Length: 316
Ligand code: PEP
Ligand code: MG
Image (cartoon, rainbow, N blue to C red):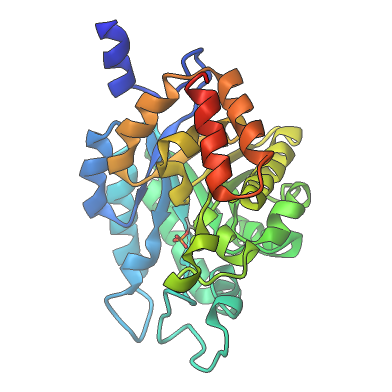
């Protein structure tokens, strides 16, 4: 029993019957790496590269500065996976030199990949820096774009990656309902999906993530959100590709079991949550997770979904 408890407090993420669910860390830069390693993260599932762009309000960081920062993160996970997200500027993360100042609805405006497609030089520099940072390292580099809306977006991003000579897997974040609904079409252009459940909730419920008054609708247990997660995971399975979650939803141990039951293939979260998610996942079989997911989806509210999943997982 002690051995079981120990294996649940370290080692790779898996259900009690051995279905592997890699547990990855969300990091904002090299400073977050020690905590991720300490928590036993199997890699990085979301490297938010925005931090590098915050020092200078007038221009993008130089290629050399980017190479240095990316390399520090990549080096920390030899043989591991590191998923880097290209710059997600705009909306709640505006950058003076890139984000239009006069948008009436910034969350619905030029942000994420849209910003980069309007500034191809910024995207090119970032992708070239990533290629240089990964050169010679045994890491499995994956690069993904935020705010992919459709196949046209996915193709534009994949083309930019190829043009930069990037030796990596290219992926799309699913943060917009259109991407979840047409995930199979997006997967014709990219090799993996990663669900950004924070923005996916915002856009599914038309509820600004920065407005506390509508926070009820930001709850990732909402059955409509679970439906979109399921649609994305099913599409990835049908295409033989992976579909992770890197939004806050992955950090809730009970919800992590439900996401696993929906067919999500990896979970990425703040390092502090990894031990809790690992321990909870290790207590349940994949079949229990699937039953919990079905029970949650059969309800009509976040509250009911949580209660239904809890009942299944506690064997009631
Ligand atoms: C998300 O939207 O869920 C996500 C992971 O990206 P961010 O929180 O950085 O927008
Ligand atoms: Mg997002």
